Length: 66
Image (cartoon, rainbow, N blue to C red; front, side, top):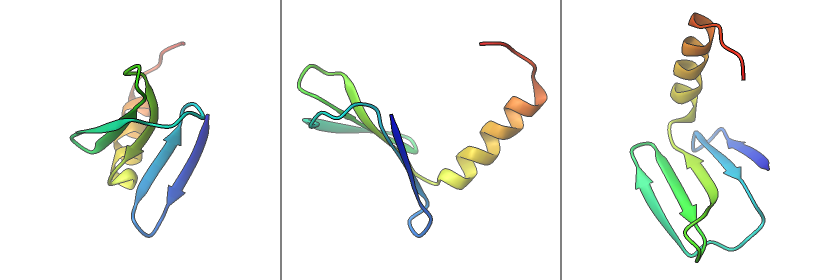
């Protein structure tokens, strides 16, 4: 898995696997790219700074284990 944050466009890009994608679906601030087998291969998080702030806030409020 590879991550890249584009500060200028404020987009966090996550490459899940190294396969070509066939189509993409926008789901709110997420754009998920799928391969021909309908498996996600790439995710873009729009307005990434706000997403990270909100996620960090949730994590800091709760204690949990994975």
